[in-house]
Image (cartoon, rainbow over all chains, first blue to last red; front, top):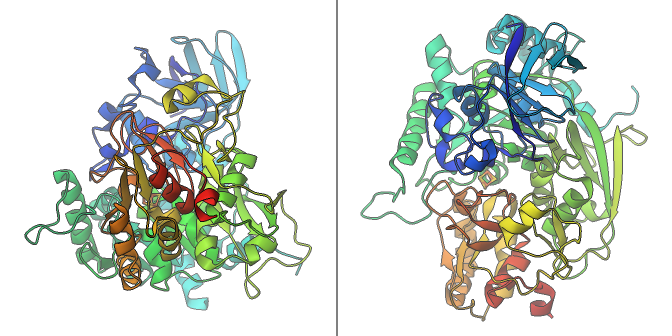
Length: 167
Length: 435
Ligand code: SF4
């Protein structure tokens, strides 16, 4: 995945927490699938009938709990990326592990506009303008090459065993 | 060696592989706590890939989030939802299959994961502790580096006992002054979050220091560290003589707070950064949305705001000292007509200790419900929840819209303030009851 192109779904509120993204009653599941229906279940007015694949939100998006159900729900509902001036730490980490691209830039977009996110150049393009964003090089590498972090850690087995042996 | 922070020391001691520009560090995990809600999909990953749990001896599980807090009926736990029961059964099966110690529902050691970890002596200074739960920061009270992880990372730790991590920055918060009567650790951390803002700690591990913190009991320290995530921080920690920050060590950010004149704090809005003194007025510049949701008015006092429910419990304030504090207000008094008060001990051990002291009687005689341990109305997954429009004073940690039930309104406060509200049926100042 090098480039994502999609329409903006704009929810210009700050501090959209994980309880708003997916209320806790939907966490009584033992699978990852099918959570799109639970996305913003108690806040349907936030999406206001917008359709698109790139969520543009206010600052401190994804604050709150560590529930990975939040990015799972967004992905299941068709979202590929989240753009916000700031994205909470655990949410960002969870997003990358599932291929949901977290983009931290302070810019406003109109609902429905087409946005392109280029992971190689780390830029967002929209209506002839371009915005640079930063992404951890490892996260970017994993997103572009769809690398699975568990595989990466498993490959470090010898080092892990050596670490345990010397403690 | 140059001066290092407590965080630096723990970080360095757990590096399997240091970080580089290209890749995060591989960090070793000493203790992995597991619960039913964020683990099933992680065990599925192990099964799909044919992996074992690398260190079952460093992994401990319990059931807390979706469990009922009412006693067994005819020998059966009264689950409010079939899927919650299925989730709990899944954890039991996973722990059995992979040889993980489980403090299951019904066991003497069951309870909220962040209450039982310390209680069982699992959490120790200098450790790295993780759990698929953002309030893992609680364990930082012992001088540990403890933080929440997502479910993919739960699978990483199960399979490799390691995590890929970029080193967060370090923030020092110095808290000084003697706490006035009626003011507790919960008020301190609510004041810290109000100061920093809900994103103010992002990317940082907070170390709490200063005379106030040094004077705190371990339970009070847990309350403070617990809510670090509510300021957006990765973790919170408190050092000791053996495990502490070297003099002269550098922090990336510093803040100081004098608490000698702090009042009991309470939140008026829908994020934990909105705490104000309980006798203050809602800020004149408060934004419209949270005002509307909470049903409060700009410039109006919170005192006297009618409430329907009081919840005392959670990993923030569900330990014995918290129950004692609530009982000190309720003892020999009656809860206001029509107010539902739920007292939910953080663990079976807390419950038994409280019953030994007769606290359960104090609560029952005041008109409160004395429940079985669990997260209960902190997250409202188990059937304990607010109904739309109901207002609650809660000792838990989050007041997000719908957190305690769809349409429910949450005012976060200390056990003293929550108990005072139960007596009045409205937001009240505990200092007046205690006087
Ligand atoms: S008590 Fe609340 S915050 Fe603590 S672990 Fe349970 S749900 Fe999470």
